[in-house]
Amino acid sequence: MAINFRLGTRGSPLALTQAAMVRDALCAAHGWAAETVALVVIRTTGDRVQDRPLAEIGGKALWTKELDRALLEEEIDAAVHSMKDVETIRPAAIRIAAMLPRADVRDRLIGADTVAALPAGAVVGTSSPRRRAQLLRLRPDLSVVTFRGNVDTRLAKLAAGEAQATLLAAAGLDRLGRDGVGRPIATDDMLPAPAQGAVGIEVRHADHRAALIVAAIDDPATSACVAAERALLAHLGADCHSPVAALAALSGAMLTLRAELIAEDGSAWVEGSGEGTDGALVAAELAADLLARAPAVVRQLFQP
Image 1: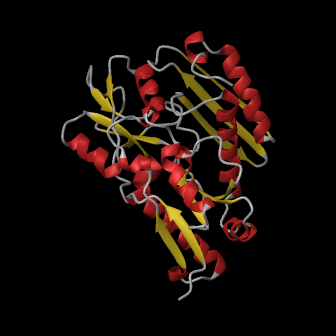
Image 2: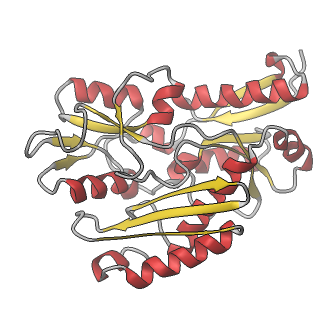
């Protein structure tokens, strides 16, 4: 049977699950058989290097650069990404063409019912600067150590006693059938990473056929919210080192954007929100407000 479309994806269990979700959505939208959409596995540097924090070895580009190359060299028609892992500034020849409906945006704590319930001085594993800063803001006594790897790897490290707790995205756990693992943390207690819970599809900017095919499965509300969160990152000058949390929500035409910037050690922070019908404008105004009010130790982490 002829292949109608080639989807590039990383090879982790979660990435393959998300690519299969995109394939199934495309098949449902266009009346295709599943066999006509190929999942093309691209091994990334981020998958190969697991012993150091992402920010130390090249940042989010380690998840995307090999997929970008495959896309630009026309080995694939589209690339599937966890949007929270996609760097803010993308190559001009590539565009985000669609997003699936967003899943649970929250983090889940594995190892305790709540952050407050962790024992004094507990060791918590995470490789996220945002999670590290938020944990230390809530519990300065905690010892936060680096945890890298896919979901199973991190859960295995926890089971082996390398830490007493860890944090994982609820969306990823749910997509892997692990909906009973961990305790969700309310967004009022811990805002998620920008774009957390969103699966995005990128195509070549000049490939109008691929763009039209993918547009059929776009969820407009998810696209609008994630675009506002990513615009905030751009206006802040944030990168993978920056402890920043953000979450947008739509009510009719009105978009509300909440955000938090935190010092790396959790000792200082600034938070705020904005709303309006133009997500890009809301993001720009909120970024300016946060930077204007941020303590110096926080402001120095962002270079707009």
